[in-house]
Length: 273
Image: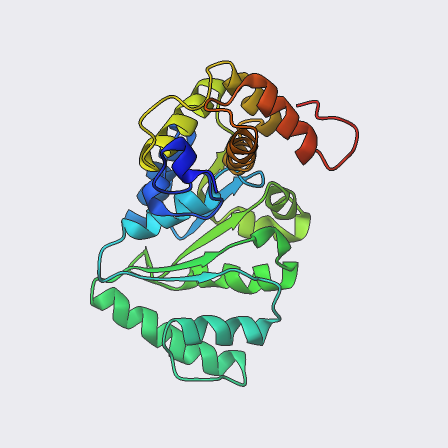
């Protein structure tokens, strides 16, 4: 509704992960560099954590985009599967013939597959998203993938991605063996106030914005609402553009951001930052 009014070609604050809108703060660049190192060096188990909406998916997508053409990556977005369902899901995703009725059947085909990839010079990456939801028993099964190697080189990299609760899961005594196998890890923190300003300007520019739409005084209010979380920045900025359009405001003021923050606060207690 507001695109023509603000001279925009596209909606700048969608909450999807369109790579054209990627903007990397210092933490995102560090996370990406750290994880790339882990994959290039075949470190085995990698861990990426962060609060809801801080940009974990953005980093994962950038990581995948930077893989060599011959590399193979599979993502599991729902780890709440039982053991055999999990094995069959990743087998099908990697293109293996199945389904398999036993763990042994799966391992014969899977080990053969990743061994062939190794000799072909192709890296294999398994990404397990929302990993804070995984069961201890399935995590223990995945841990055994670390034993699959040739001449000291891991045949598969397993990338655990999850919210902060994943750290608590890994700290349980029963998961100490998995914890000791994680050789590369990074926790993404929210954007700073200055990064929040750069993030907003970047997305507006990519969307075709040729003028300053948000007054400078807005940024502190956006940061107060979002805490530097990119997803929440998108939500309140999109709402602010709609509100500004409805009230015929060519520039978004601090008052509009505050009004939107109240409307978006579902707790009914008022937003406190």
